[in-house]
Length: 73
Image 1 (tube, rainbow, N blue to C red):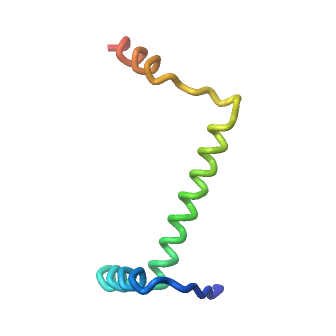
Image 2: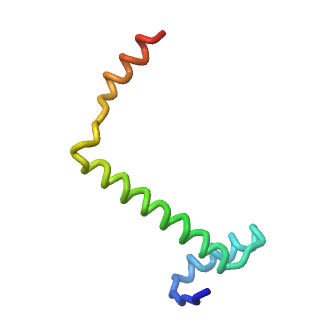
Image 3: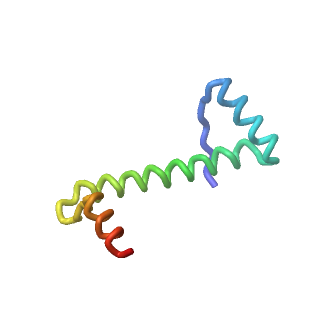
């Protein structure tokens, strides 16, 4: 496993240490998990933007969808 060094503001380290203490985890575990979540979110956003820019991907009209759902009752 590679080791990475980063400089963080003191107030962020204080929050990190408090969260680690409360959760019974190490700083490294919390940072690793936070990065995983962040990178997953970034990838989700990238895919969403890619789909929004796809001219072949149909865009649903909310009013039309709503009408169709209400007509089913």
